[in-house]
Image (cartoon, rainbow, N blue to C red; front, top):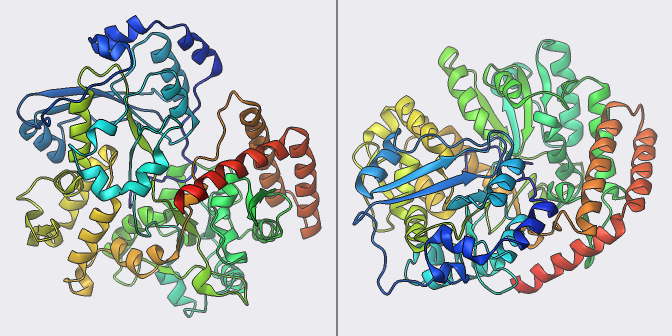
Amino acid sequence: MTTFNKAFQTALSVTLVVLLVLTGCSSNNKGENTGTEEAANGKQEASATPYVLGEKPLEFSFYGHYDWYTMPAWGEDLATKWIKDNKKVNVVPISSGGAAKQKLNTMIVSQELPDVIWMERDADVEKLRSEGMLVPFDDYLDKYPNLKKWAGDATLDMLRSPDGKLYQFPNWYTTQPNGNAGYLVNKKIYEELGSPSLETTDDLFAYLLQVKEKYPNVVPLEVGQTAAGIDILVSAFAENRPYTYNAMMAVPSGDKLVSIFTDPVYRESIQYASKLYREKLISQDSFTQKLEQVEQKVITGNIAVYAASSPTEFGAKGNALLKAKDPNAGYIMVWPVHKAGLDKTKIFPGDYKQLGWNVSVITKAAKDPEAIFAFLDWFTGPEGQRTIMWGPEGLYWDGTDSDEAPLFTDKFTGDVEGREALMASTVNFQWNGNTVYVDKSKIKFESTLPAEKRSWETYWQSEITWKTQYDTTEFVNLDPAGDTDEGIAAQSVLDIYEKARAAAIMNAKSDEEVNSILDKAEENAMKVGYEKLLQYKTAKWQENVSKLK
């Protein structure tokens, strides 16, 4: 997946108060939303014959449950216009208005749910499901085969709810490694400094000191918004250690998950980051800067190295802009750095999960949930993916090969600006991404091109980033519901974690002070229920492990 900065984007929880209100909602009201008695009783009968897109109009509402997400108008770009005209599908966006939690709560209380909710794969889904608000997909899976074919039974089984049914349609699911996390390097600066080794953490530190001395107006190491790139650095200090464990606030040890605060690898990475901060080798406003500021620094070449969960997003744009002004400028990527003595082939700055990123759920407000599922299934299939990724047939692709991969036209490589503009116009419609199909189609085509015509992004994905992402499927769905004891503890621990991380990096004057701050964080976390939270996450983790056997 090459779009969206996914890291650390999370949906806000549905509150207990709202769910208590829901408990009192009558099934008759649910029935009014669907217009059928069966829906009111929680039943969604599949029709005898498959729904065929294009035979009759289909319109449904779509709500992206994120503060940051605003869906563009459907039908105003080439891809969705083609879908609207040829498949007779119209999608009506509902915006969060920058306040996703409040928006969803309001819709629930007023019993005016959207037909589809695009959201995180978390406890909120189960809350909606347990209140009888979601439509199960099981009766549709064989009738509409794309999801089952491409995601596979193992992935779908991981998405099933406690009642054994499937309610979640995954986005960017995969059966092969993918991801973009890693290190972007300013090519011109790197070459002007003699292209020194950038293999180890010591190499990186020495290089950043050189940059600071020779290029005073350049940020030696950009770590992104809220210093997210600091988490990437943890992978350098241990083999098989993705930054996912930081986000989990828990580290595997045998068959248990233990404290992040006492973990020696985490501590070493924070000590390293603190040293970088003290030496002014990373932005001093790393914890407060906005994403737009990061983007501007990258695309104008005002950084030497950029560590991030998806540096290719800004890197591709910056590479094109810088090369347009100077053929020797641009960006390259380097193999993830590692502590001396470690096996570099076991260093994983990023991760991937079979389940992908997030999910779409169909609510019982939908008048024809099967028709919506039929569309989502088509959307995740080859034709839907070709259309939303590269536009309708006849422009940048014409026909397909035996694997259903698009046969790209000369315009695909000749009209780079137009192609990129089209792809940018559809990025916010990619709710049902099919990673394997899209990635294989890109690589298959790229392999036929001379080096100068290959996509910068696809090149580095195939050379480095896809090879250095760790499979963390076993660690999905560990977060407790926000209204439980564990959920309340999780929020408190998160607050402690974030404050301690910032203080250790920005305020500590030595490794000893870093340890002292983390010691205090451990003590405070245990007081608010961290041990109970770790026990909960361990149990959920072991459930996943048993499912994956």
